[in-house]
Image (cartoon, rainbow, N blue to C red):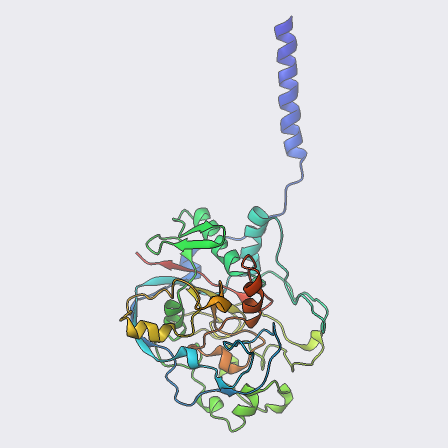
Length: 376
């Protein structure tokens, strides 16, 4: 009798468990199918001259406030220098073959990672500040934004596991190691990113085009060096407009414009690709690279004969550059000088925050990333 009662109880418990499992509301997971053959482009390895080859510099000469999101490598916050100084001297670099994603990682892809791993979604627009209220631009095929460097690293490991590849990254709290011999997804090195953006090292100012006429415009100085009203810029950069979302194509009007008229990111793949079939390498969102940022790294490579697959310095140079990684490509809200294939960027906001809090990871509404895999 006891055995029968126990059996009934067990059956009842099992039925209740499975019924409860069926009735439990499942979290929404975005549907998408990642396909390497459709999303990744093979970039054959080669040798090229990495760095800026243009003789005439882009000068700036104005003061910025602490925390302003603009390139600045002087602790006193004064701009009176060539903005491309850290992209020189040009030096010979060899990179191995690798695969690179055609598009920047989209919200449709990144959101699945967030649902499964982090439990929260990243904001899809401007966070808001003392001048402008927060807003949303939409998700789907827009590039994922508000992505920190560590977010991007963790996504690479997650997707590698999903797709049956080896994970490249080992994460120890705030220290990340990368095994470049693994076949999984990772962030590009600066050398890889520039090589691909320049169509295997071709001297194009922007990814996919040169637009030399637009760059020689007599009003270039007023346009690139100060935050002027876009309406004053005239009919500039007509070739670049076909390839990139930047402040002449994204809806950005000028610095003081209302938030709803100040530009935004756009669906990936809408502009022309470069010759390798890569979209939005110039503009749309800044893209994280593996390398720590060091303004003197190019000279260091020359002095130490580093030519084969350079991966950046072991750490950022100086205490005030703590934990800073490099961004490339420019964004929807930037001037053309920031979109150049040789332009190196990090955020002054990142520097000021990390200086006092090493656990902080910088991101904003202009930062995203794309994927690479080492080709075997």
